[in-house]
Length: 508
Image (cartoon, rainbow, N blue to C red):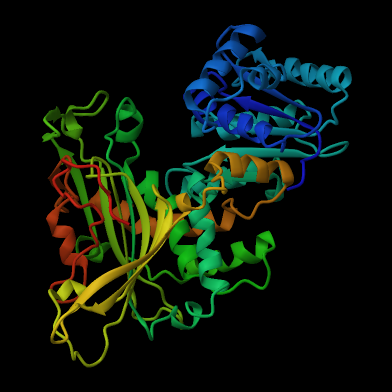
């Protein structure tokens, strides 16, 4: 892998959790692999008043606690943190950006670093356009002697109109090619492997259509609750937090047509076509196609767990969803008539993200099976944890007769002892440094995804009769969600051995 060109990475909101838990450990991993530029600096910016050494000490602790490197070398940590500095100022006030400009100019002169700057906004979304505007006022967004790149975290707006407004404000300041909307799900190795699985194997792509596939199911489950993010989450919910971005991006990669090349826009154009082909969910159909739920108090592994409404920062009468399941169709030749199901939720039995391709049953059933659920082949692409791929198919049980049993053929990345799986942020930060935008959301993708979600948001806001179902923490969400799945006796795939949340074993 190539080394990026020399540059300075500026992190706004550097005193927050994202910087200490994800960004600095990911940058350290790039250092371990010798994938940072020859001349490179990190400048943390925030309101917290601390000096360079105090900030470095905090980052050292973060690397030791959160780095994915086993037994990180203390000498290497010391060497890496020497390239970290800190500047205290209020990023909301344009007056502070002259100070930032002068500081960056001093770093480029004293350290001989080219004036290439990446600005990472690890801040609340309301600050994105403010920071971008202030950078512009200070002359720091113009690409003349070097590049300027802006990284922003989800959510990219809160609905269609705010998403469009954010894009308009950013485009008034910088070009779309300078904006990197980061979605850490797209940085996961197995998400990218979706493309390889489909387009590098002659056995899968000919079957990847309505002629052979009965349904497609995508699950992203979390076992934790909202923890200390209740205040934020209560104004967001699962639809905004997960569906509009992570889930629909995975739908796009699963359902896309083969790109003409691996060039960034070729891949993103095909994802956009999928999002544009999503059959809109009419407001009147929301109760039939969308299930929302909210976890209630329960006992998990002998521990009492609060219901969502009793979490810190959450209103006692909150109707914010912690679980969403959606059924929809893609209106194109490849997928016409094939139902897609997506679900995501908190306080489910385990943490798991996977794509499940359910193939159609054989037209004539010759053999005896144990249950209706075992009458079709499945291809399971596990995104996290225990990344891998599983193919489920039928085999004859030993002995007389033709009793059939479903068996697994599986591959786990962990079985590749000599292969290191990079963290999502590690991969994405490297891509930004290289100027590769393939795994980042484009403006038209974001707006098209919001357009699909908008009728659901409006229906929930306008119609209080639409139910929000309670589900005990540690279960797989409201049981009524099974009714979304078309077909007699068919349900969602439940990857955990124990559905009551009493065990951590998760079957691939």
